Image (cartoon, rainbow, N blue to C red):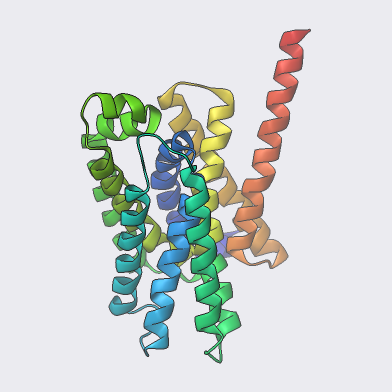
Length: 276
């Protein structure tokens, strides 16, 4: 057990930090009904770092991070400009298109690399097991900054997420606040994808929020439940990874899926009991 703690303590701290910010950001994402925006921005961030790799820069370099962030900001601008007062086409459709094109470009670019398959795997599931203390500190500082920013402007962000038509009526610059939301969200995603990969980042964003929404409408309780789900999935996934020798990121993602199924089953049982 002591060996498990020694090996997994830094990855677990990283998962706790990921849970803290992603579980919170998951609620406005679900309320906006743009579930795949995280996948799209994560894929765009991975595309940016891949282009830096093709030009001879290491994936862990500052230049690669700058490319990822630049591409993510571009994606944020696209998503904010496609938010209209009256939508003929759901924004989710446009986000899906951006994701598909980014993924295709990533595959095309990596086909020119001798290690393309390995880089695609890295982009999908990351390698959170190799996280170090410096990376955890960087994540903590970035996510705390983004968290404070969202807390200060929480009324604007919640309004454009829950009732965009009301925001338009009040004269709020919805596109500007959308852009600020997606840019701040992009900072989080860019930092997370480098470490955890696209699939794990998506799971941390969506699954805790969905599990919490199933059981309560109160924001504070949702946050507590979301953070609890994220912590539980991290522990279960890492135990499975360590003792059964599975990839850590993929194990945590599967743990999220299992917890979601259990939450759905509990919800169904509760509803049947109340009906009876």
